[in-house]
Amino acid sequence: MWLYVILLLVLLLLAFWSFFSSKSPNPFSVDVRRPPAPPVTDKDIRKKVLKQAFSADKVPQNLDAIVIGSGFGGLAAAVVLSKAGKRVLVLEQHSRAGGCCHTFSKKGFEFDTGIHYIGRMQTNSPVRILLDQLTEGQLQWAKMPDVFDAVILGEPGNGKTYRLHSGTKEYYEELKKQFPGEDAAIEKFAKLIKTIAHRNAFFPILKLLPLPVAKLLSKTGLLGWFSPFIKMASRSLSEVVNGLTTNEELRAVFCYIFPTYGTLPSNTSFSLHAFLVDHFLKGGWYPSGGASEIAFHTIPIIKRAGGAVLTKAMVQNILLDSEGKAYGVSVMKGQQLVNVFAPIVISDAGIFNTYERLLPEAARALPGIQASLRMVEHGLGGLTVFIGIVGSKEELGLEATNYYIYPESNLEKLMKHYLAASRDEAAKNIPVMYVTSPSAKDPTWEERFPGKSTLIVVSFAQYKWFEEWKDERASKRGVEYEGLKDTFVNSIMETIFKLYPAIKDKIEYVSAGTPLTNQHYLLASKGEMYGADHGLSRLQAEVIATMRSQTPIPNLYLTGQDVFLCGFVGALHGAIFCASSVLQRNLFLDLMQLTKAVQAKDSKKND
Image (tube, rainbow, N blue to C red; front, side, top):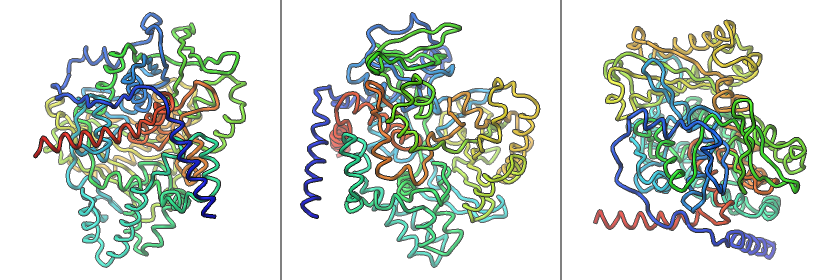
């Protein structure tokens, strides 16, 4: 047996290093951070960066790659390739770039659409260093309060509130204070989180190795010996948490953050949950100036390398040559198709859009494409309410702390009842509300929007509840659709008024987005918030190995959260996997070296 293990490890190492023997330049060889410039608020300047509409004459010549979609998975991959000397065109179907990082304005209020808070953004953390390289240090991050998240079990004002504190030690010590007598359970939970989150190397290795080697390794069952992440991936969050404590409220607090990846505790891999808990142990951060700053500070790097980011560019299909290799895309401009050519095509449109809509019919039937599709399911749809309020955060009592509100402590039962209900019943029994105030988190807000504040509420919704209106035009779906939305909104607002009673007579704007909204603006196939479902099957070794940036179509690559995991940082890692594959270079090793160099340089400055 041990000889078999040694042979496998040798095979793994040989494949790993031979796969990245490229002579492509290192895009992370130099620390490119600059002192941050003053915020750019001029609308015309921002429009030139974020809203450059597609036309054939704006397409750069001699492209090296085309990226479909300007979500951060697409933008980050494009920036990395640009830093390696490639000329990249990013095509976005919406009128503004950024995907879930874009913002919109209504009645003088600005709203985020997807980026609400990020973990691990402390100075010189690996993720912060990576983002600094992708924005040349221009994107600034505001630290949220010590209590970055709070969980309410029951009705605001009458239920119990549990607070999550920043800092690895403080997070767990404060939990112990709030749950006396549960020290042992909390310590076991903390140990599991640390072990899984910090010993996860085989997760990325499975995606970097050649697929046959990765599949062989996953089928041996040996990975569980070496990787706590792989070992625990098949155990559900419910199973693990229920084994730690009988305290229903502590179980709920252990599980509270499941809306950030969108699967029920019974179908959530504990390994995935451990990633997310660990990600926020040091607290939360918010992009100073709002989520649109992310795209605003990445696009100039793409343009400087000779590329472009063009909006209102609906890609109709991916072009394949007679050998089945990708060599460009067709873009709908008015009533005509414009073909754009490049030797590499990267899709940030998600696995479903890419494989089921953008590929020619013959390519969709390929065994490798169908095998990948059989491994995944559509994730849950999202429901979002945008609220504009007259008054400052001080006048209204708004907090930068995020609230997760659950009517009771049995989160599994709440969600199952909701998802199984009719749409009319569901609208009156919403199981979870994530409540956040972008205006309270953003240190630049008061200067940009004096006397105004915003709240955003996020929950789930079944696509089928709204599917009958999918073929109607956005904002023209009729009275019945708007009435259904209003039922959800009214139910949500009753709870929000109990959390923040001072806002009741100050509301100037309320709007709701359903799964159809996500489908229209983000091209989410079924209105998903997080792409392909992140249930237990997604975290099994063979699926991890298969869900990768390389596709069965030569010269076609995937990027974003369907390549790695959901959320902003998940999409970012998906982009690094993608760029590594395109460049045939292990960019994770390059980033490790850069991180050490930056940390050492900054340490000397502080001595």
